[in-house]
Each structure stands twice: as C-alpha cells, then as structure tokens.
Image 1 (tube, protein in one colour):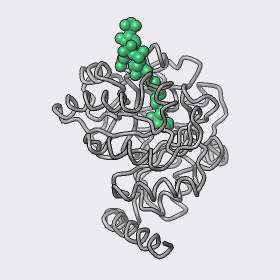
Image 2 (image 1 turned 90 degrees about the horizontal axis):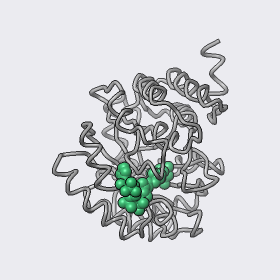
Image 3 (image 1 turned 60 degrees about the horizontal axis):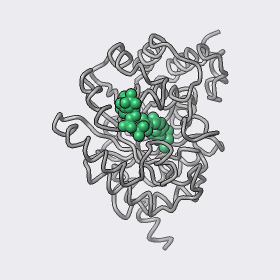
Length: 325
Ligand code: HMG
Ligand code: MG
C-alpha cells in the first residue's frame, strides 16, 4: 500500500511539474484562482458598493493573477451582496490574459450572465445532502440535474465551465463526509463537461489525513490536472491541506485576498486561505505563481480598510508597513 501510494505520488508530481517547469524557468507553476470578490464578499454583512468591488477587482487584475472569480449570478433573495452582478461584471476593466469566471446556480443566472458577455462560469454542487438543501434548496441529484440543463446552453455558447464540490470532508449539517460521496459528485460534474473541479472544504474542518483520503479516492477516477483545492481556513489548517494537495500533484489553488469571506449557508465558517499567505508559502517553496506579492498586499488592504476589518492575512499584517510606510 505504502509503495503503491509513493509511486502514484511520484507519477503525478512529474506529470504536473514538467510542462510548467519549462514555461517558468524550471520552477513548477501553481495557478491561483482568486475568489475574494465572490466567495469573500458574498458573506460580508455591510453592503459593499459596486464601485468598491470593481476597484478591488481592477487592483487584483494588476497583480499577475490569471483567474479572478468576480461575482455570482445567484438569487439576490438568497445572497443580496451579489445583487449587483451585472454592474460589477460590466464595470471592471478586463484584461485579455485574465479569465473572470462567475458563479452560476441555474439557467436564469446563466441567461443574465450571458447578456453581459461572461466567458467562463463556475457551477456548484455539494457532497452532502444537508448543505445542498440549505445552499441551493434542492437535493444533490436535483442540483446535478440543474447543472446538466445549464451546461447544455453554456457549451453551445462555448463558455468554459469550472465545477465546485462543496463539503468535501465535512458538512455543517451532516458532519463527516465520506470520500466516496465526493468522488461520485466529482465524476458527475466531470462527465457534464467541467474542465476542472475545485474541491471545497467549505467549513475548513479538513486535516492532512482527511484531505489525503479524499484525494486518494478521487485519483481512482481522475488525474490531478482536473482538480483544484479550495480551503476555508476556519481551523487554521488551510496551508497544510494545500501542501498535501500539492504533494498529490494538484496545481490549482483557490484563495481569497486577505482571507475575506465565508459562506452565508455555512454559519461560523471563515474565509478562504488568504492569497497573500498562499503566495508567500509558494514563493518559499520555489514555486511560481506570477503574482506580485506587494501589489496583492495593497489590494488586500484596500478592501479590508473599506470594510473596517483587520486583514485575516498574517503576511499582509507582517509586510504592509514594511512595503508602504
Ligand atoms: P429557490 O428559492 O429554490 O429558487 O432558490 P426559485 O427558482 O424558486 O426562485 C426564487 C426567487 O429567486 C424567484 O424570484 C426567482 O426569480 C429568483 P421571485 O419569483 O420570488 O421574485 N431567482 C433568481 N434571481 C436572479 N438570479 C438567479 C435566480 N434564481 C432564482 N439565478 C437558488 C434556488 C439556487 C436560486 C438559490 O438557492 C440560490 O441562489 N442559492 C445560491 C446560494 C449561494 O450563493 N451560496 C453561496 C455560494 S456557494 C459557496 O460559497 C461554496 C463555494 O465557495 C465552494 C465551497 O466553499 O465549498 C462555491
Ligand atoms: Mg468557498
């Protein structure tokens, strides 16, 4: 078993590192998916005006990030903070080499997003029944059926489709989640045409062992190139869990500038791992992200100053005065 595991690890590492090493002067590349403007701000109780959101996104666009999830086209009755999705998407300055995905729950959301020219969408399902009901008012299977209906249209329009699976190790309503439940939903989303599945530890309860068990099960049906990791940092385990994912060959990591956020339907869960902390760690590991840490720190401070909260990023707190005073 140990030998088998070791050879899976080595095979995955080699396969993922080789192409990126070439592009980035032999440094392995990790793509960061910045989710602060969506996952971060969706949980913010004070109304953040549209112009503040667009300015944050424009600042993030200057940092070297290649993917920024900018808003969601969910029901404003469920998440009022995202109700200005059309104005946010239309108001940002888009760069050709950056993708600006938006979160889509149903056909209605997709239709609104297409009207403003969205090119990449993210669909979301859950590995737990309890969270599926609370977050989307339907069962896991009904959620997948909804996604099936909307991806038919999205594919016809040549949109890129990313998938999320929430509650990959634990659920605020159902407790511990079996790896096989995650694998089943991931397989369904991949078969619908998602180019990549982001594995959401929605409430940040994962540890090295539970994350590892979940990934090992997934690697029976897919390869690490099809996976991303999305860790909320409620219990301070996010960086460890990301390192574990990197060991298994995953090379796409979601994060939120200054650790903004949480999920409105997962009470008590804090924001994603802070992008600044993630970049600092990856820099230290000799991995390339293309992201300028100083510019990122400035963007993070811009939004935490506005919402009048201290930054949840330790790196931002440690380096801000060094860079800007
Ligand atoms: P529902 O109430 O069952 O839907 O919600 P409905 O079809 O009955 O519609 C209710 C009302 O909402 C209607 O308005 C619809 O028109 C409207 P009314 O007729 O009453 O005036 N509506 C919409 N309006 C605008 N855009 C739409 C839309 N859809 C319906 N797209 C629904 C079902 C899925 C819509 C709802 O449950 C919902 O929007 N849920 C989203 C909740 C959410 O955004 N959660 C956070 C994101 S997920 C997350 O954070 C996890 C993630 O980060 C990964 C991780 O960490 O694990 C991705
Ligand atoms: Mg999330």
